[in-house]
Length: 167
Ligand code: GDP
Ligand code: MG
Image 1: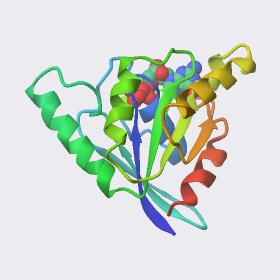
Image 2: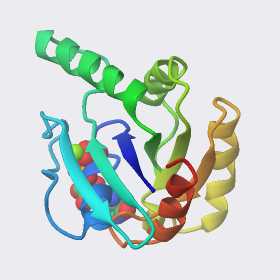
Image 3: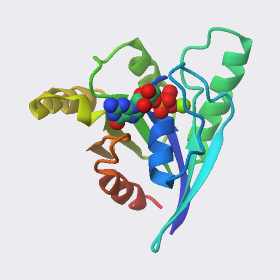
Image 4: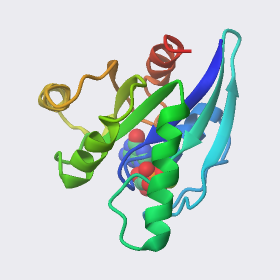
């Protein structure tokens, strides 16, 4: 099994951290400054039963300038070519226009979208998860919903299992 996986989400939700944790090396550029990852970064994860190429896709957000427009177009093109899309959201932040914008872009793709609710480690009460899960799933038909902590490497196996279903 092998395939391409695009990782999308608002700046600072943890896309680069997730890819780094999955690959186990510092490859994707990380920073507290949003939109540091200007180019598409690819990382290959080889496991016994599957090989996955992860694409760090920073460009899916409302463009503020010409370069931004180019990035958005490149990112949208990516979404049509991949085998699966991971939409990363921050468990500690409310659904907002940034998420709404991405969900609208996702309507155009027929690829499976896996919702990864990240920064689970920052939730003091795990019951806070339920309204987030139901909130997002009321807005989009996700192939799966997986709560994770990219930083603490929590439930990444669960995420990989969902991805492998689509390779
Ligand atoms: P990106 O802009 O989506 O690529 O986000 P980054 O991967 O650069 O992460 C943005 C910030 O969130 C960094 O300070 C990360 O250390 C932090 N972060 C990412 N994932 C997690 C997580 O699971 N838990 C916590 N507590 N922080 C995280
Ligand atoms: Mg990044």
